[in-house]
Image 1 (cartoon, helix red, strand yellow):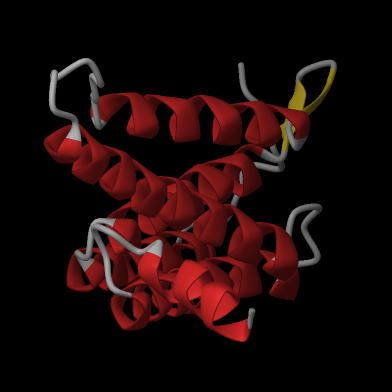
Image 2 (cartoon, helix red, strand yellow):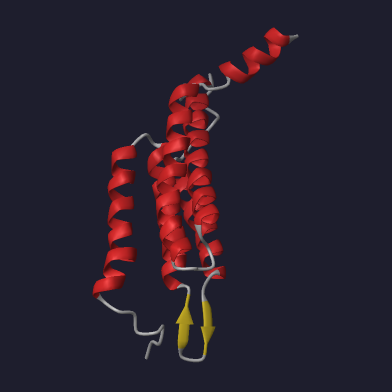
Length: 163
């Protein structure tokens, strides 16, 4: 019985080995945490945990897509159709829905735009980690941190008023 459970848990990783999937998920969590930390440090509505979860989820969706593409190769009659771009579209739409919830408008004041953009960025970072492009995800995370943290000190915000 234990052999069946062990085989089921270890052999279901068809496209990405368990060790690689683990590395990618941990990288997504760490990079999502960096973006979320900046939001948390400035007491914004979506912080550390939200950004980590978004990044891990996006990575996981990407890993699932890779497994689905591997199933396509195993299909004898070619009946299984896989379009990896749909995963990107689904993650983008889902994160956009979450990000929209963080944006608050009060008359001419708009708050939460940067937090929403950070959530969207965490999704992209997770997708990048899922594809195995951790260096690209790390570079994007670094740039996001520059934009959200360092530029905050150089260019003061307008108080959220847009005209």
